[in-house]
Length: 222
Ligand code: SF4
Image (tube, rainbow, N blue to C red; front, side):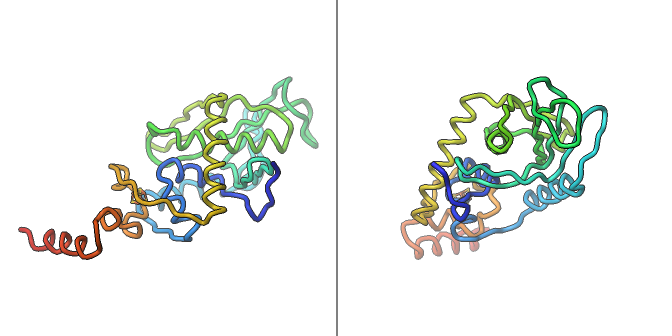
């Protein structure tokens, strides 16, 4: 299937969607957004990764920052923080450069490596876009975390690619219906930047009246 650009999803939405489907829908379908410390730090980190939109050659590696990517078959678009180009006989030719080069996407992330696949899914989707745009294969990419400042290599295996396709299919279906999934609370809600907009406790209460009564009791208790 080939998607029309109007229906493209943001690649960055994959990490929201895998974190909480409702969070993704509130941001994407209802245009709600709330900054917290985590999102602000993350935005600053990405700003630094994107601040130079040019290529440079360092230790035999060509580096491109803020590269726009898209995939008509996946129906997504976005940008890669950094794409390194490594000399590789199985790579592709680049205008104005000798030899063959293989793209190696690197995504910058705030904080420590996560237990979940959220960051790996986003990176994998970027690589799948690059593969479609450049007719090449990208077996590996990397995530760069700022605490500690180090890279984590990510094998872009079939399982990860299947998960990207499955989640994107679900996201497209929800976008088409314009449907925001109901609350499914968990410990992860405490780290959610949309907690004050989503009001998970209110949605879990049998009624608004019961929510207000519980909130008042909390206020009154010593
Ligand atoms: S508060 Fe919880 S249920 Fe609501 S959007 Fe955030 S993570 Fe999802």
